Image: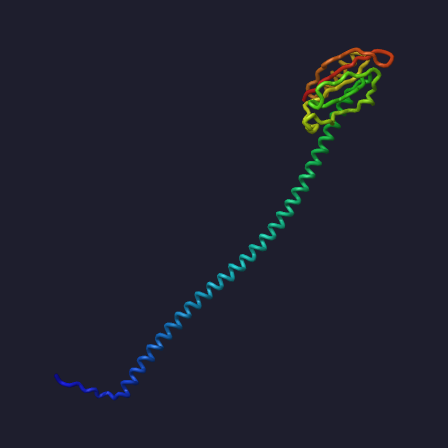
Length: 210
């Protein structure tokens, strides 16, 4: 086996080893810088997405506040409209009963005097009139409510009581009520001759059903 001789000077060998270490360090530094650049770009995108998400969240919160304000305004408007609707129904009900009473008065002959008008089922039976009683003592009661507190527009008809000079006047009044049509079916429930002032009168009860 022949001996090997290393003719390269030691100083040169050390310099070569140092250059190799430097190259390795440079490569490692370059890789580290590349990794940092990639991570920096990724973090920049994440930060941009985070800022965009925060901006959207802020806008959604503002939209939520505006929506809550609109809902509060709509609730206030709904409450106001409900009150107006209730008032309108009440006014409509009053006008409806006014029209009903106008129809009854329009069918009234001169020889007939009304003593009572009651809504059904507000009143079940009309009490007998006392002698000499005037219609002024018994005002119209078509707007009264029933025993369960129903509003007047839930009535199914009217009970009309009055005094007439004779049975022909009662028949004329009933016929004119039927001609009105808007009062529904009109039937004569009872008639009775009774004393009135210095003479006699016919007390009658008429039922209307609509």
